[in-house]
Length: 459
Image (cartoon, rainbow, N blue to C red; front, side, top):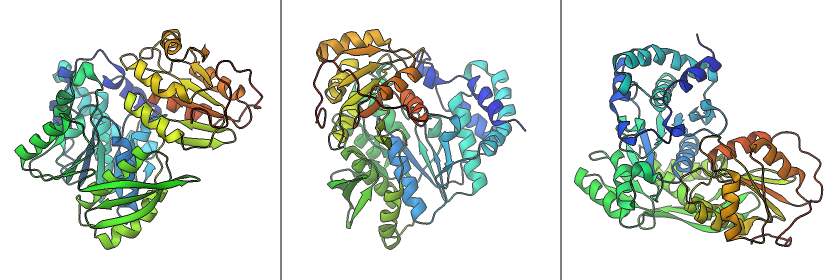
């Protein structure tokens, strides 16, 4: 049996669209994953599934749904992407990462079929994401999960996960993202996301902007799929902040309950509401069971890399925000978090709306370090610094290309009571989770330039 390291090395030998921005979107499709699953005995056929797509919030919604169903007493399998630190994070059962040996064994079953398909049709061979999707489905079948939750990797229509027929399909949000692949308008991107809708399968939709909402609505009507909308049929109202998160009132039709979330951000309250709506429409869980489970499940849910507080001495926060909308959501969440001098460590990928991201994040910062989380995809720190100077000329930017050095230096320069924030990239968030978990350096007062320190910077 191959080791976890061998399995990971083999996966990396496959085409990985997540790390290949030059890979033509038109070359994606469901034929490779269908052929692979046929060879494996179609392990997805007997699974009760929730399928989640969206520009933002789909991973959080999936993890909230996982926590809620677990609290209801169900055995749950969850497949998310991308990973923060280890590829094995993508597959979870019972709220925990599947053991590496079990996942390696699943890939050991898959590998000969992938290799055969690569030989038969090199131009239409299974990708990294096809293989990990198949491995997740195998693990869920072997674990005899009661429910499986699949997060779409890219788009929806051509995504590997779209081979399934779920109990409920969810579209969390739609914004201009991956415009080089999914389309240059909201309507075009919405058509890709709505590609996960299936005939007669209930649809749960977030607060979608027009004309994206019209596209999803029309597709649901065409398929005879009943549809519910955030803000009309279900939703969330923030009651107030707590020392570790926030209290929110979640409602769905005649069900209403005030719960505590262990994560900040009004957008996360909305994601919790989406998860509740999905769970109510995905099976036979009664409201009598669901009500108490909401207290336990939402209180226990953990969302790695999403306004995640790694520690408070000093305060260390990581978030994978990499679009203008997610950057604005992060900024709004941090404004209610008591913090002092804030050192922002930032890495932004090429192709992102850099100016808009900086406009949202720079007001949070008293010190700024620019780095490069990925050698091939991240913008050069000097390039980001040029744009940052036009947005916040009083804020001096330090360029440290090595992300490990940048993150360690930010902590070393942090004055007492300060906050270190790493964001702009999922990959930087993953690196920060490792680096900032190391023994902390002695925190010393920093010589700061630009804006003066304030009790709550950017607040």
